[in-house]
Length: 310
Image (tube, rainbow, N blue to C red; front, top):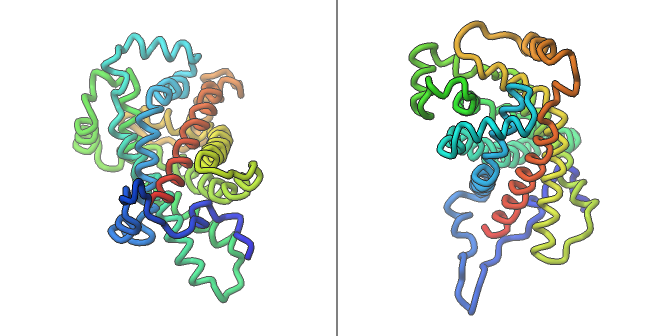
């Protein structure tokens, strides 16, 4: 039976077998699956994959953030980080570590859960599976937006203009809530919603077809490379496609207090400040492309590897 284009490699992974070495089990089959449930492993694998990625790529993300916020060249952003010093290089790591580990867990886990529930409900209705899975992906992306406060705090801690005001993650959260209210933590929510839903639909919709176009892997290492390439190409392409929304998000979230300006107004402000230039609006997009290529390659390959191990 043909597999739907929305199915990932994980959906086609056979039942887990114990890993053995010298007759001794390294990972007893089913232990983690039993502990987390048959669907819970998708949350665990997604979270661990994101954790690995953030630790490895955080310095690149800081350079990219400075380019999005200030419209400077990559070399100038690197010089800013050099002036900030080594002790500030990983400043702001905790929010993306918590946020990304949780959102990627939600992304993969809720997609699988929503798909299972919606496919059961739509079983006899005649709704195409592609539509059902697309809706599941959009729902999962929308649910991720509940963690917007982590992106908000990450933005403030990475912006050198706020280094003297916010000390760390806990202090930033406390200051925003006590001085401005909970709604201040959700500044930049709209561009995040506009980004998450559509990007999830495209990611899960194209992941299977892209891997099918790659040379067939005949070894574990080959599968790992295929998963890396598939995730990397998708992440890089989507990163470019939704880059202007990330610019709007960064600009909106760098503000503390004041009016919540509409996305269109923020985008027009950035557009005017950068001389009405498309090239300036996409300043940093090339670095974002390479970072996304690496990040989503790591996430997808690690996720699929962990699924097989579990």
